Amino acid sequence: MNNHEQVGLSQDPLTDLKQRLRQFAAERDWDQFHSPKNLSMALIAEAAELVEHFQWLSEEQSASLPPDKLVEVEQELADILIYLIRTADKLDIDLIRAAQRKIELNEKKYPSNKVRGSSRKYTEY
Amino acid sequence: MNNHEQVGLSQDPLTDLKQRLRQFAAERDWDQFHSPKNLSMALIAEAAELVEHFQWLSEEQSASLPPDKLVEVEQELADILIYLIRTADKLDIDLIRAAQRKIELNEKKYPSNKVRGSSRKYTEY
Amino acid sequence: MNNHEQVGLSQDPLTDLKQRLRQFAAERDWDQFHSPKNLSMALIAEAAELVEHFQWLSEEQSASLPPDKLVEVEQELADILIYLIRTADKLDIDLIRAAQRKIELNEKKYPSNKVRGSSRKYTEY
Amino acid sequence: MNNHEQVGLSQDPLTDLKQRLRQFAAERDWDQFHSPKNLSMALIAEAAELVEHFQWLSEEQSASLPPDKLVEVEQELADILIYLIRTADKLDIDLIRAAQRKIELNEKKYPSNKVRGSSRKYTEY
Image 1 (cartoon, rainbow over the protein chains, first blue to last red):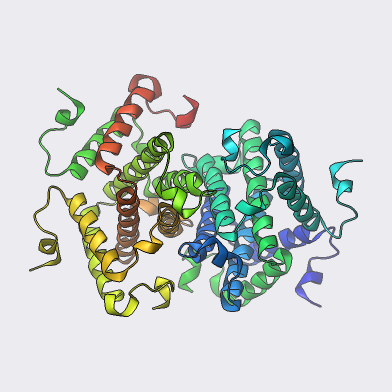
Image 2 (spheres, chains in turn yellow, brown, orange, cyan):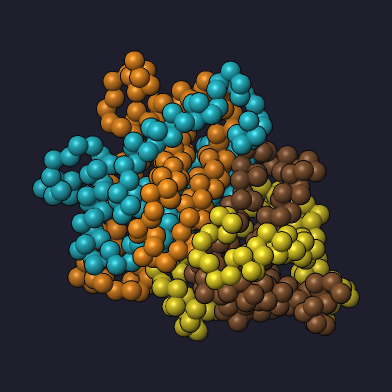
C-alpha cells in the first residue's frame, strides 16, 4: 500500500495532497506552528528560493534550465504548492474554485481586444 | 456552455486551469512577458500580498479572519496558484507529481518519532 | 524647527532616521505591533512592491525608468529602508557595521581573480 | 590601510558603503548582472532569508533571539542593506532623502491622534 492509498479514495489530486499534508502535520504535532500567518511566511520564503534561481539569469536562460537546475526548481515549486495547500486548508478555502473565479474576474478586467500585446503594466488598464 | 467546458474534457482541475491560463495568455499575446524569471517575480509579489494581510495580526487573528478579509485572502491564494501553474507550465513541470515526491522526501527527512512537537526549526534536524 | 532638529544633533543620517522612527512609533503606540517577526513581514511586503515594478520590464527598461515610475520606486526603496532600520533597532543591530563586516566576508568569499565576469551563481564558487 | 580608507574620505557611512560596493562589483565585472530588475530579486531573496528565521517563532521569541541566531539575522540585515544600496545607486536615488520624505508623508497620512494604538491595518485609515 503506497502513501496515496493511505488517505483513501480521492476526488482530485489537490484534495489528496491536502489530506496527506494534514496527516504529515498531525503525525509531527506541527499544527501548533501552522497558523495562516506563519504559513504565509513559509510560503514566501519558498517563493524566494525560486526567485533566487533566476535572479542572475536572463529571461531566455530562465526558460531553458540545465537538468540539475530544473530538478531544484521543481522542488521549489513543490514547496510553494505544499504551503499554498496548507494555508488554504487552514482557512477552509477551495483553491481550485478560487482560481476559477479569479480567472473569470481577470477575463473581464483585461479584455483581449484592449490589452493585446501591450507591454504596459496590467494595473495601468 | 461555461468556461470550464470551453477547454474540453479534463483529466483533473489543475490541468484545466493550466489550459485556461494558456488560452488567456495566448488571447492577449502575453506569452512574450511570461518567462520563468518574470513569472517568479509575479508569484512572489502575490505571495507578499498574502503576507501583508497577516503582518500586523496575531497568529490567532490570522486563523479567524472576518468575512471581507477572507474574500481578499482567497483572491491572493488564487493569484499565487495561477502564477505557480504558469511557471510550472513554462518549465514543463508536473506540479502534482513534484509535490508528491517532495512530501515523500520530507517524510524521510523529518521522521515523526524524532521531530514530534518540536519548536526547533526544520533545518536544524 | 524642522523634524530633523526635533530629534537633536545626530552622529549620522541612519541614526537620525532610527530616532525619528522610534518617535513616530511611540507617538502612535505602534511598538506593540513592531516585533522583529512582524517587521520582517512588512519589510518583505515592501520589497515585493519594488519587484512588482520590474516584473514585466526587461533589464534594460528597469535601468531607465520614466520619471513617474522612478518616484514610485524611490518610495518603495524608502519603505524598505524604514522597515530595515526598525528591525535592526528592535534587535539592537548596527546596520552599518553589519554591512561593513558582510562586505569583508564577501571579499574573501569571492576573490576577484576567481570570479571575474562569471555568469555562474555566486553560490557555486 | 583598511578597506574603509581605500575609498577615501566619506560624507556619511551609507555613501562609503555605496562606494565600496561599486568597487566590489567593478573588480569582479559584476555590473553586467546588476540591473535594477535583478537587484530587486536579490533583495527580496535576502528579505526572505530574514523571514525564514522568524516563520516558526512567536513574536516574543523573535524579539529575544539566542546569540547564534542573532549573528545570522545580522548578516541577513546586512545583505538586505547591501542590495538596497546597490539598487538605489543604479537608479541614482538618495536613500536617506527618500526615507526622510517618506516619513514626512507618513506623519501626515497617519496623524497620531487618529491612529493611536489601533490594531487596524494602516491602509484602512
